[in-house]
Length: 114
Image (cartoon, rainbow, N blue to C red; front, side, top):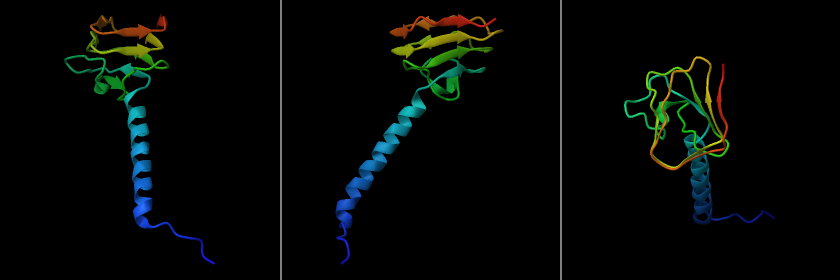
């Protein structure tokens, strides 16, 4: 005896739902993570622009680290709610002025590597 088969019209919602869930989890992972401020950030220098970070992600999470090294754009602007575990300035980093124009939370781990 063959096992019963599930009609296609009942399988499609499950497959579609699984695909949507996988996309949602993947897109969230791309949007947040530890990163280093880019050498050539854009002219607006927005913290929330993933193109201003290497890799292209925005440090904005309780486990994320924002690292700053040498850059031609040294006035990053925080204009939205941001949370990071740490902000690190590499040895030889440019002098930065971080503008905070929105809510910001750090777990008090700012460091400068010499």
